[in-house]
Length: 485
Image: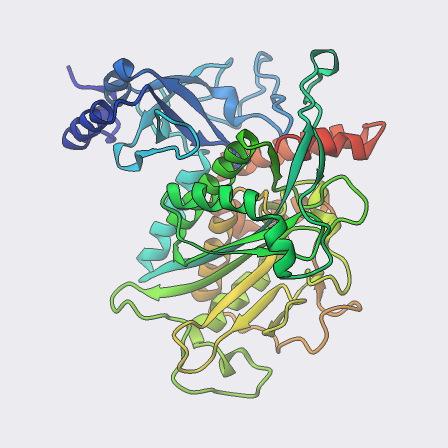
């Protein structure tokens, strides 16, 4: 009789045997098996070493509602009502999915002694892959891009906030759904961008971040003091898109846990619930690599056209990719900025975008073009995203939009001379408006597939509806986002 993992094409006997030996040789006491849910949050189970072989062969059962939850962990579908899941083939009345570990993803957790970790893939019990699993969507997008002869290279710049915990907020008398955030104090007072003195004040916490990232094998390039109180930024070396998304998930997950053990609260929410904060963004650098040659496909040999034309700085391929990102900017915002909170960042003169515009080395534009003729580091920086975006869905949206630009040979408009003051096509100003644009974007809908598009829209509108009836919107966002993400 074949194993379940073998029947669904996820079995590797040699890799599994090596993993089992390594777990034994390291004397590990437990192994976590996890996947990223709709919000990019790790979900899974902790196995004892004796149970690992069975998990590798036949997977681990997990409840299907893990993919149906909003940001508070409420299930957005009435799963026990007839017809509630008609748009999600394979999903039933809180039925089981099978989480199959990938031995090649094995690592040990630097903040949790004796603990190993494995990423898993989700399947239905008949062996079919779960199409709405976010990582699977990005993997399919990358494969489609490879069919055109390209790979997507991404560099991550991630802003977030770190606070020192004063009271952990775990008083049982205060328990609620979702739970209250801890009481915190600032790590540094802010308003001194890249200030070395603030770096010294934050050194203890940043050392935890550094050890965690490097212990997970992440290519951390720098840790920087951002402008806002208690705000910092992590910058990583570029890599392929799927690896970049995996690293973003691992970084957020690991940093929050490691800092919590050390007495700190890390949050990737865009705007923490305090006065005088600076919003955090996720600046996504991207370029294409020609798979046949390994060359940066955005680089052109010599400038062409006027200084305000994209072909002055980018190859024809790069210009078409840029045009695709602009054409689908409104719909893709729903995936890049997936929270009610994140839209407070789009403000004039705040180094955050307000319209679908591009410009050369301009931090107020949505798309900042860097490099130029002959520069191997030529790339596009998309500045629209927030740090809570699901990396798999955000990066997939870039692939779908860029591929459309290539397929239709789109020509971008001239570079923006002014990015604020009503210039250009406005970006959505709320999550609801972004979801409307997403629903109207046939390219993004087709790319994600009808089931995932339906799932994402339903879950996010469930979140919006609860926010709309909250008596205290700030308290709602504090519990919903700041406490948990």
